[in-house]
Length: 323
Image (cartoon, rainbow, N blue to C red; front, side, top):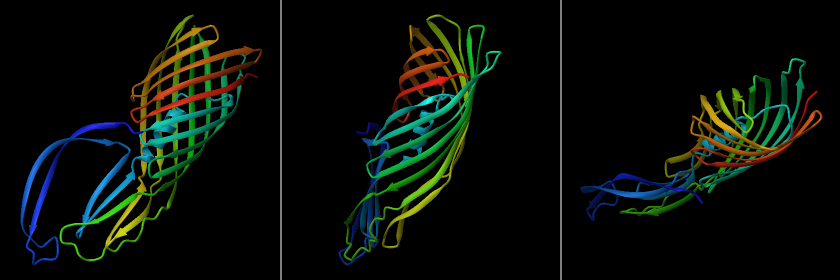
């Protein structure tokens, strides 16, 4: 169920009186215009558009912002990710009318040098599926990266560089309602709704650092991220009413982004509760349990990421082997 938002807008109502001898809506002899202000609610990921064409009212209900939602989910998944582990992670996202599930499989290795430097590297496979009211989106991707960390004077310092490559397949089937109005008497030429698949690709690259301060129970966290994401444009025709063609598409994206991170860790025995706030408006909370036996560290974690567009819940299990 989408979350409604309340907004106020000025609605202009135009009333047209046509003489009975005319047969076209445009052959009006007089018009009267009034303006009113009213409050309405809408669902931010679905739009209903009313268009009037030669005496035909066309109402189109279709999902919007699917591309933005999928990219936001991908950023939530890759945010604060590290490399050098073996394991899997499941993400379930709710964004208004959209619901998405993502599986991520991690394969990596961590090397510990003699001077205490930890170097983790690996590859992550991403499989996402998202459904809305009238659309569905599939995203398959590969994430490559490296994480370098060191403990010094009670601080755990780490830096991560990652590059994610995604292939998108998007299908949209809008709901179209046609209704004659005014003095319309002729037939409406209507092509029928198509449901073409749009296929495109994108990338998301970023570098980040994270510093976890000293402390036995509570430890402060500071960090920062700089990244760039790209998506190729694609479009397709949906239907034609008389001489007007309606299309939908994926817009080209070539943006940079950056944000700072602040937060804290609370550790009790093998359990660690982490709360992070990012200056781009994203908040994350997670609870993890970790146990080390020899050179192998086992971990399970559950978390929740909240953005301006929606929320993502995650659960993961994995291990780190240090050589």
